[in-house]
Amino acid sequence: MPGQAIPFDILLLVMDFASFATIGAMLRTCRTIYHGSRGPWLLFRGGVELRSDLDIISFARFLFADCPQRIRCLRSLSVSRGGFSGYAVEALAAILRHNALQLDSLIIHDAEDVLNSVNNSSPTNDSRLQGGECDEDAHADATLLHAFASLTTAKHLTIYSLNSLATELLHVVPSPLLTVSLYYGRRSVGWTLPPAPKVTRNPLVHLARFARTLEALDGAGFESDDGIVKYDVVYPHVRRVRARYEYTQGGAMPATAAYAHSFPAAEHLALVALPDDLWDPWTVAAVCATRERNRDDQGAHGSWRALRLVEGTLADVYVLGLVCHVREVLLWGRVASSDFQAGEMLGAVLEDVSPEVLELAIGGFDAFRPDRVVGRLCSKPAAQALRSLRLEVSAGPAERRVDRKEVASHILRALSMLRLEALTLAFSHGGTLSSAERTMEGFNTARLEKKLKDKIPSLQDVVVRHTRASERRSYTFRPGERDSPVHDESSDEQSEDGSTSGEEVVQELAELGFGRLNDEEDGGW
Image (tube, rainbow, N blue to C red; front, side, top):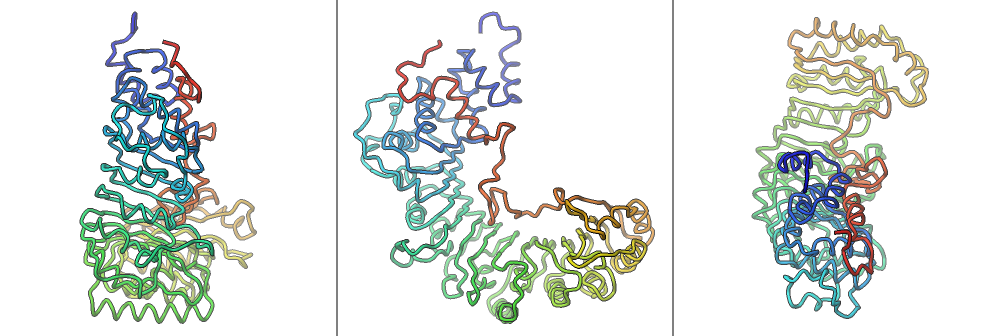
């Protein structure tokens, strides 16, 4: 860069902290950066998201524009929507088949639509889409299935709206996967199922090829039928299993011993099948029966030895019937303070696993009374193992009047029975305050903190605070997170202008001159 004011190595350090827009501007103004690998590496650091024909074609032209090292910088790729033109399919296939591609992470949204995109055009002569290093049969396959199947370096695979065609992809991907996230689409009458055993939505069957390498399994829409879950496939290195199962009234629930056998080294477990508000008599009876069967099966076949974190609704954790120690239990949803049955289930869970850490949300400021959920829980012998307690307490649906002094008295009485070392107590208030919430807003949290420290000698860290609805505790699996079994794709992380980081990359490529379908020259240089 002639006449540059700062040394080039300092300029590269500045790029490390620059936005996508700034990096794009630097690529447009400096030939050295444009032709080097540092700019593309930083531009691709948050991944690239391709959603349209224009995204794919402009990105392919940028990758293959006289800078062969660019494609080596691409490590994370997301493709969505599908319905691509033949020209875009050819361009994407050229990227996926490129010999220099070292992709580490692949995310496919709308998987069936993406994989059904067909290249029905004649081979293009656009050298900017070929890159000069692709396989000779790059145009031979009409769909993208085999193009994705040519990836040999991918270690992390995520597929959304997965049905029959995307399931086939799992059987042809050659790279040894480390993490897999599978989010099955809704069943439809028109879905033609492949032959058995591929008919099942059981990942233990479809991922058997990766049994020796897989380290984490996430997803949603899995089968939970005891007859479908297999005991003959073992994944010795999987540390995390997080999945939401299809459940309808009368359906099967997860068989704990099957997963303990298949994932013996699991440390983090969430098998989510039951909503936290489904308490009809039939379901309660089925939950209790399944729990007893799970406990018997674990007694016969064994359970986990290294499990340290379990999460889910109270019903989900209860139905597992665990017979091993678990250090931390995170419960989703909200338990009513007056729900006697939920209190009994919660006590049973503590007896099952003797956790040291418990996170729980309670509906009702009277929860600490001796006859309510927390008050009864603290009096149980199993609660003596607790060392850290994180509680969120909100007003119950019928709670109108609250006596702050009485609430404080019950809190001190209940929690003083425990040998806690850490306590977080949050009084949660909604957007429109009820009379009970308005009363509790004036609660003196600092005074309660001091009294708790005086009352519980072992307590080292205590936080008592008020929170609003928008600040409520976030579950590991709250809706809206990319790695959540209840993921909401509409809530992906966005920049101030509403675009995701992957989209920002494509926008900057358009600024670089790669966003027009009929470009003849790169120009501007």
